[in-house]
Amino acid sequence: MGESGGIKKGLAEILELPKDIILDLPKIIMIGNLQIYVENHKGILEYTDNRIRINTKSGILCIMGKNLMLKNIVIEEIIIVGEINQVEFID
Image (tube, rainbow, N blue to C red; front, top):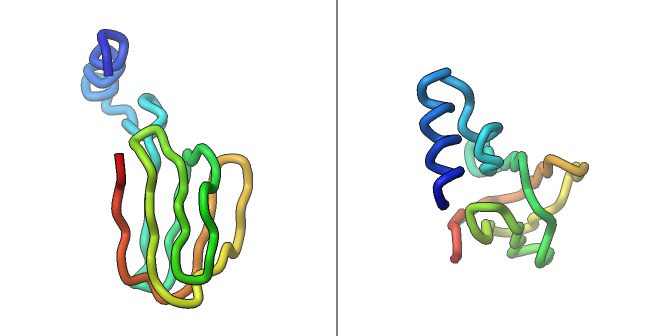
């Protein structure tokens, strides 16, 4: 992360600021295994009905399941619906 990353992380902790905003990290919210919300993404790399790969500052977020569908996509956020079986980060 480098020196500036360490400074930003320390500043976020001292000021109790959300790390996802200060460090530009993805914020991921799951509702059961039916919906996943990804904020601070860097684009979609792959989109099929059983796998969606999203680029983030923390690596590639891979979502696997059945009948996956992009419900909403805007510059900063994505909402995916379907039967979510697995979520993982790949370097």
